[in-house]
Length: 296
Image (tube, rainbow, N blue to C red; front, side):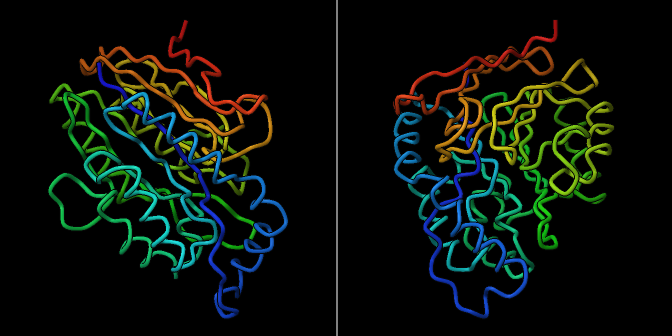
């Protein structure tokens, strides 16, 4: 049995004091939004308690599906790197970026420079997407849907080159008989998010999965627990969304939480079960729900 901890969207704060020139354009609206609400919606003390709870369950690997930052300031990424280092080594933690990490074009270089070891293939000396990590009969495939967008837009895009490389990789891994765990930030289905927040090429992603399959797809972005299925080569493929791991408001599907996903790897016959642990109404961290992977 292989145990994966899936977490996402901590939006680590507080934001370092930005320079005025850094708040031109989209960052200004993002900074105002953080000051008005996001800084109290995401609690770093709750985040640390959640991480402590996760460690107690001794996962074999951590899948981290993005939005470690808030407005993509260069000064946010050393803080993000320090958080990842506390979470675990690059061999133990697989990270994919979210739209807040690639907030503007100027975010991309400091993001990659700081965090590339956690988003690179085994043995690689730099980051490239898709990336691939093999672990005990399981393949972790990291995709980047993080692209800079206009103000008030939080959509993502994979793009044709990445999708083509992904399809070839998934086809080969299927022939190897590995259990394929796909990670990206945006929900990769056409009904996954509202216009302006969705994956723009979700339909193309679904077609790739229909041709080559996958055993499970993990994502963040919506800040809530969700589990649906899309058509795959070997049968329906579960697509799993996770809450923000620092959010303190809402129902149990939206409050701070993470998933524990157990896999008995056997290629397309892999057995997958899961549960959600998170913040309860009385402020404790406990199991708050099961993940039902069945399609019946």
